[in-house]
Amino acid sequence: MKNAQQTTNDKLWNSSSEALTLTDKKVWQGSHYADFPEIIDDGDAGEFTNESATDDADIPGPVAGLVYRDRDGTKWVVSWSNSTIFNHKYN
Image (cartoon, rainbow, N blue to C red; front, side, top):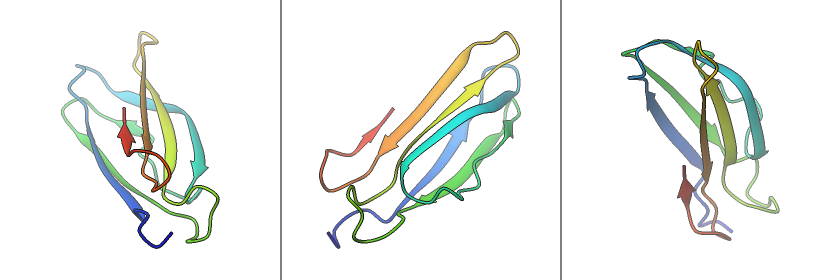
C-alpha cells in the first residue's frame, strides 16, 4: 500500500468569535503523538500534521477526529480519513 497518503497536513481557522478548546481526540490510524492544537483563539489558525503509523497498517494512511468546544458548550467535530482503502474524507 505504498500509494497511501502518508500525512494529513491541516490548518483549522477559527472565526467563531471566541476561543476553541480541544476536548477530545481519537486516532484510529496514524501517529498517536501528533501535536494537535489545545486552544485555537478567535481569528487564529491551529496547524498540525498527522502521520501514517506504518506502511503495512490495516488501514494505511491517517484516520482521526478532533472535538473542539467553545465557551457555551457548542462542539465542533473535525475528522479525516486519508487511506487507499476508502475514499478520502474530510469533515
